[in-house]
Amino acid sequence: MMKTGTITKISGPLVVASDMKEANMFDVVRVSDKGLIGEIIEMHEDRASIQVYEETSGLKTGEKVFSTGEPLSVELGPGLIGSIFDGIQRPLVEIMKQCGNNLERGVDVPSLNREKLWVFEPCLEAGERVSGGDIIGTIQETGIISHKIMIPPDLSGIIKEISGGTCTVEDIVAIILDEKGVEHGVGVMQKWPVRKGRPYKRKLSPDMPLLTGQRVVDALFPIAKGGVAAIPGPFGSGKTVTQHQLAKWADADIVVYIGCGERGNEMTDVLNEFPELIDPHTGKSLMERTVLIANTSDMPVAAREASIYTGITIAEYFRDMGYNVALMADSTSRWAEALREMSGRLEEMPGEEGYPAYLGSRLAQFYERAGRVISLGKDSREGTLSVIGAVSPAGGDISEPVSQATLRIVKVFWGLDSSLAYKRHFPAINWLTSYSLYAGSLGKWFNENVNSEWTELRTQIMRLLSDEAELDEMVKLVGMDALSASDRLKMEAARSIREDFLHQLAFHEVDTYTSADKQYLMMKLVCSFYKEALEALEKGAEINGIVKLPVREAIGRFKYIPEAETADAFESVYAQLKEQLGVCVKGEDD
Image (cartoon, rainbow, N blue to C red; front, side, top):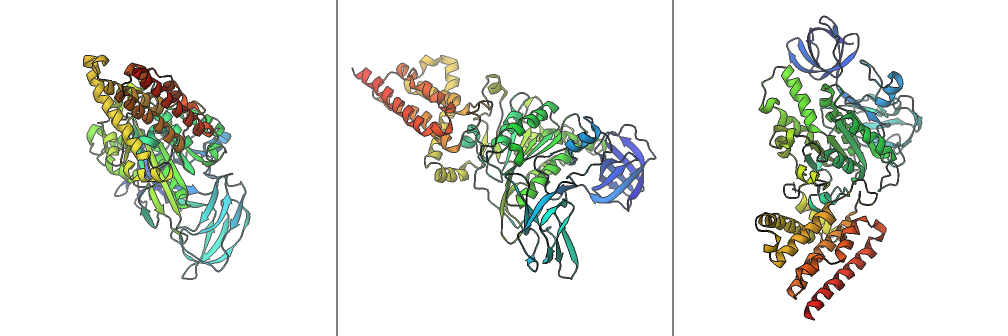
């Protein structure tokens, strides 16, 4: 039975209600006869401060508040993949069918379709003993995702009944007899409170890379499966396009994309693009492994705060099935702004720049839910959840609180640079300020699985880029002609790395994605140019002749060669390089 209270104060999305002594923190409430969804975020005796996830205009003091007695939870079951939800898991497509293009207040549509039929195939039989996390059967949700029906984490016992066949998400497919002889129905769908992380057996160290097909990421600043990364950058530097690229091409079984407070047109790009894109790993539509959560800047600000937790709870659910999940949050700055607004309305003591004092701990609680884990259940499934959060600091100043709090938590920093973006160098990730704390441990994986030279080539590239930055300061003072031949060659090799390797076109059908094998060949080419040219210089070749070699154009065009042709093309370009440098040296001897 719903507990009722009375509205005594309204301040934007914050509503204060009295007579709520029987309610609990984080209970979901329905506000007024309009049925607006809210959540209790603070309690003082019998007064509850409620964060309302819908527009509160028109509310009056004296109206009733109804507590459901349950925390804000998401529905977990078949039908998640390919769906578009708002910040509190309302299905936007279903709402549009009922209400049109405008989201009406108080609309109550179940998150998962109650009428759609699924085929449940049991993998266990009656009489078998099960515990939390055990898989009892599967449902083929899309062409590539097999949805595993799991025993709830807090339940164990013996299967009394289990039945296969067609079912809806509300159907009970198994009955479990616990230790006390009490029967429990296991349904196709589970509910889970969003602010509580889903349990697992143990966490493992992340030591496999999340391959993204983006060269500056995979080669220089890799992220591990189960790792956490941040992409801070000013307006126009390419945060959203970078996250779109990672969502499209990352080596993950499931992608959860959260549009948290970003512009509506950017989310529209995702909704228009993703269904048309073919996943390079499966050959199927990208939407067959994607969950979208859209809470754009024109939607209620309070729901931004919930959208992050909604997304990561869905991601944890698929992780528990044994999948590799990648979650993109665009952007955590908008989430932090929602925290700041609610904190101000609660009259809490502000911290730096008005953000609440608990900003850092809330960010840490969110990012700490990532990881590589052994799931509950007797089969010891391994699943990973990688979290990549964009940060949008005002004016691109990463000394502001959200960026700094994020950097204290994450292990990969892809710092976007507006000066690179203005030069049309994309992705505009600054190779001098970015870092990855996973690079050392992942280097072993690349050496064993791609090529034993990977770490050596990466080190050489980073050294050349670092040396170029130092030489560039000298060139600005005394000019290029004052440099020695070897330093000029170093500058040319670094330019080749920047333009031929790091620069990548997101909208080119070949260059948009580069496999690890092709990345190795590209690194090998640009590093071989430097190594072979340095030897040619020592044998007397002129630097001007080396700079103008025709093969440099072939090295630059290598990125546009389709994957299937790269091995032959590499041999051809490398042979041209050796031949043309040989001519340079021979010409000098003559």
